[in-house]
Length: 130
Image (tube, rainbow, N blue to C red; front, top):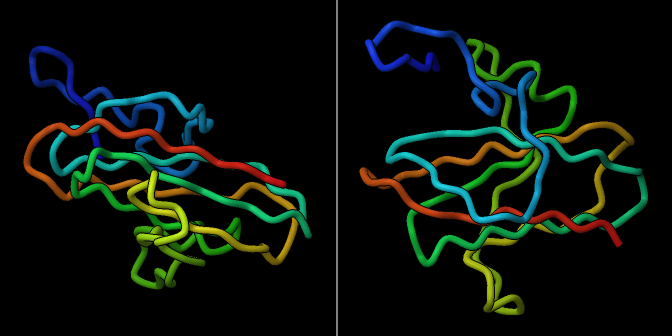
């Protein structure tokens, strides 16, 4: 992904464009361009339950959860599957998508968010460790 300036000249990856430039989760509402993608990072302590929720007013925004080793393969011919994907949860009706679990080890985990709509949508991504 390459951002452009107002003249259409490439300016290189911007924060959130690639895993190494992943954003911190803030639980604030954000816009995401149609067809756009962005990356977030979540520091994780092993043994602590992690819950990730996405609110998007029913828009076609999805997310995947990647562990520190898997994310190294993202975008390569040897790309592996993510740890998980956000999915509807009838126990969490206030959120469009949820992912919850215990991860295998300490480290920084990543969330890859994709807007599958052709138009800009607003979303809020939150993470909680309990």
